[in-house]
Image (cartoon, rainbow, N blue to C red; front, side, top):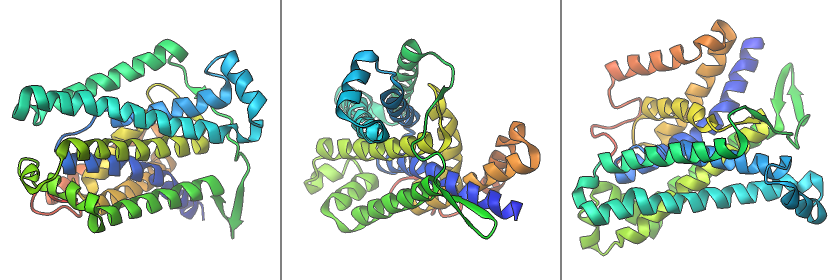
Length: 313
């Protein structure tokens, strides 16, 4: 039963990895570069939620919040601010990692300049947080501390169940949007050929920000759910989650949304089982070892097609 409990815990953790892996998949599938600002967006949302609830924005903001919102509901304000902050940061990132580079340098932006500039934004955001709140882990007082139940001897945490369900629901609606809406068709046309898409009447400069906004929402929700469930944040929390999420994305198949879901859940289970059997110091070895073995046998990942990234969304 202990093993079954660890598998359940791994699936719950995998729900967070799913959203981050899908965010990476979306940018790679659409724009064909690895967006290093995704961990920054995750971290920003987590830090905003913590700061709102824990007084991190200073006494004046906290006094205003205490006067207008009951303490039990302040996390909702924090979640709203976290999503808004991640979306705003996403638009700033899009403006300077993609649009400005595309306008000034044209085809030279594919793929090195967006990648390097997104890495610069990651470092910038992390050090802004360090300047404000330092490098030490910060504890979050979860509003759902003891909300759980048993089925037999297996413990289920309600916030973790909500996290898993919400992540799968968001990705399901994203998949429907990509397949059945006008916006989705435009996004898939850009993924197939960004140079040909404008000839088909698609306004790329209006559609690409939508990709960044979707990534911002996915990362924000993932950061909020992670903070509520695991109760600790810091300037490098996004990097720690993103490294494993990248492994899940590649494992499932680069550019494949459903592959990212399976990969995210799988690495979540592997991480928890690795800690259970080998200890925390060995947690990355099974994940990346399995990834290397699968890539040797099937370089496109479990659900990847013949072509990597392009056109797979």
